[in-house]
Length: 325
Image 1 (cartoon, one colour):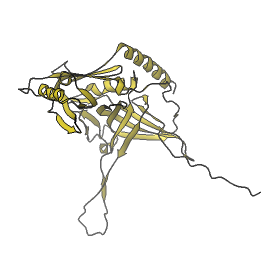
Image 2: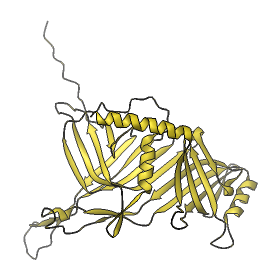
Image 3: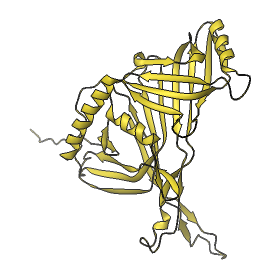
Image 4: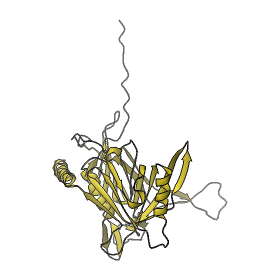
C-alpha cells in the first residue's frame, strides 16, 4: 500500500486577548493601528522619479469594543479614567497607559505581542438597542508602539459572567416619562489632541517625529434616545423638551445598566425628530449634558452596593492574576 502524506492544517493568527491599561478585556474587537505616512518631496529638478521623501509623524489610533458585564471592574476602571484629568505643568492631560495585544502562535511562528504605548481615552461610547446586549467602545490615541515574541495568551478572565442586555436597562428622565425607549447611545468626548515638539537634547535626536504628549480639550457629553409610543405622549414629550429661553428646561437623565448607573446633569434636549411608519410613531431626540462649575460635573458613574462588592472582589482577583504573570 502506497504511503500517503497529509499536509498540515493551516493555522492563522488571531488575537487571543488584550490587556487594556493592565486589565484583561473580553474584547469583541480590537481595531488598533500605528501609522506613519511617507511623503514624496518636490525637488526642483527634472529627474524622472522622486529622489527624496520625508516621514510624517507616528500616530497610534484605534478602538476597543467589549460587552458590559455585571460588576465589570474593567468598565468601572475605564469609566473613571475617562473622567479623570491630570494637570501636568501648564496643560491638562488624561491618565495614560499601554494596550497590549497577544497573538497566539500561527503556523511555524511563535506567539508575539504588540504594545501601543502612552494611550489615552479620547472617547467612551455606550449603546444598546431593544433585545440586544450593551456594548462599550473606547476610542484611544497613543504615542508609540513596541512588539516582541512570547506572551501567555492563557491569562484570560476565566470566571463565568453574564453580559448585560436591554433587560438590565432602566431610563429615567422628566422629558420621556411614559415613553417607551427602544435604543440609547451616549458619548464622552475628551477632545484629545497630539502635541509634537522638538525634544533634543532632553531625549534622543529624532523623537520629534513622535507626539511627545496628548492633551485634552473641553469635555463634551452627548447622546440620543430612540423611542416609540402613542402620539399623545410623544408630542407631550416634545413640548417638555422645548423651553422658552436657552437657560430653562434643564433635565436630569439617569441610565441604569445592571449594577452601573450613569447620571447626566443639566441636560438640554434637541427638538425630537418624529416619523410615522405603518401607524407606529418613532421619535429620536439628541441631548447634551453640561457642567455647572467646579464640583458640578456633567456626568457621573455610580454603582449599586451589590455591584460595588462584585467589582471589588473581581479587582482583587484580577490583580492577583496579573501579579502572577
